[in-house]
Image (tube, rainbow, N blue to C red):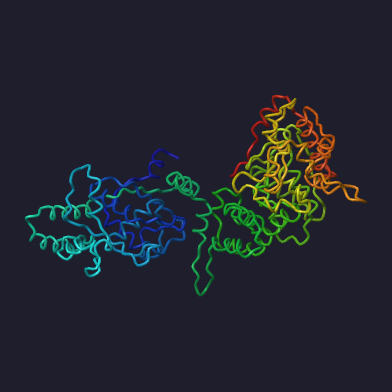
Length: 609
């Protein structure tokens, strides 16, 4: 792109307030639906007009000029904005909706969401002088609303003075100054001894005619860039997502000939009408990428070749309508697979978000899914030493791999590899791939509570709702700090973690494991091979070593290290069973430079392709 083309992309300019609002009312400017709801406050509107009155800059209005047609807000401040049909180019207000709404309703009145019956028209008290250039308080009296003028026929004494000024023509609407300046001037000339009145009248007239609202035209800007621009100019708010663009672009008004289409309502209804699964709350972006791949895989010449914004922007309403009936069934099967086959109850535990896409593609119109294949697939890639599902190239390979199994012949997995030291050094992270994989494995075994041994604890855990899931350290960190012994491993390792109910977790607190284990070690009943507590420990992938130490009332000086090493072996043995028939490789990089680089800070999965 040449330098001249770059400079043409952004063109600053200015326009008078009156002209800007007239163009808006004619439909020349539109406000897309991805713009946020405005927060309209009287004080902010007064400050806005004070800035204009003093010819202070307001900040630029950002206008995106494009040939893409989006869904728009049909009303702004209660004013109907004409549709922009049959235009070669559309102009969308990307930033400045708040100021636009305030200016429009200040002059022309209207309605403010959340303020029924309130009149947003702005009046000017021409008798209020501007004291000096640093005057920062007179605006509260200069610019007023009708509820600050109306004395309700003398019953609201607070407004009596302003109501008299209004009756005498000293308080006037901005609209009256715009439409009948000469008439007001003639009337106020009778108060010629008060020069403040005419000075303020002329000043407001000058403001309406000559104050230039700065605006910037964005031309030739791709959708992906628009999302970045929107996010950077709205750092305090929710960033603009490509989902918002697709929703606006695919929106279709219902007519006699065809049904309407609104993607946001479609997904919202899906979330509320389905089975109440926590997985329904996955992000809009996740849903969009799943639908994009279903379009790519099931509609010929769809034009959707990837799940990047460049291609998501090409999605059409007709394509979404085509794949949605079978698509939502496939998505529900994905959620059911996680919850009821793998016993993973929350989306925050899924190691790769691309699993939603690969699995939905496999389930799409698949009457005979191979759940044994899918279980191996999930555990293989969740725990593999390498991140093998973190980009779109890998995703396509996964889709091909799974789809090859739809012919009735199970696809062949490569060699599985796991590093014991990565398990040893794993710690809790709400974003770490291996962290989530380990917690998913624990969840898969339906762990029981240590005190109430017939109670499953997973339903009691709101995993990452506060970024502090209800996890328990078997060797409490404070206990290890006070009794370090000959331990060298970190007590925060996930190998030292189990799920427990909050009540049991609080009960144990920082107690010595030897002591609190005794409290739960109920003797086995006659005829039982195992006690209930021994079965509970197995449900947490724990060996009986803890129990043996507790019963002997003594444990090794390096009990934590020993315990972690045994748990690693237990986890690996469980994975070997889950991956039966697949070549299984183990390494241990403990103490090597490579191990330090790869495991001290667990790699996070990239959130976008």
